[in-house]
Image (tube, rainbow, N blue to C red; front, side, top):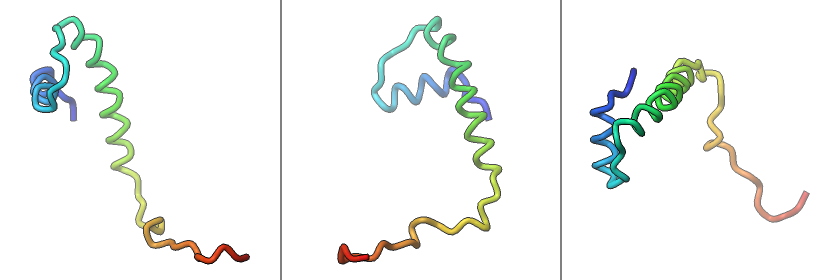
Length: 64
């Protein structure tokens, strides 16, 4: 899922970020595409056998 320049410009505008020139966007786009590719790899991971860390609770009381 690639992010288009138009989408990036809209996101920057919506989050009230700095306006970027076309040259600056050309510099950013390859890195952004790399980040999106890495996120897609993470989405494909099978985590069905991994217990959620939100279920773990530490014993309170400070003792051994």
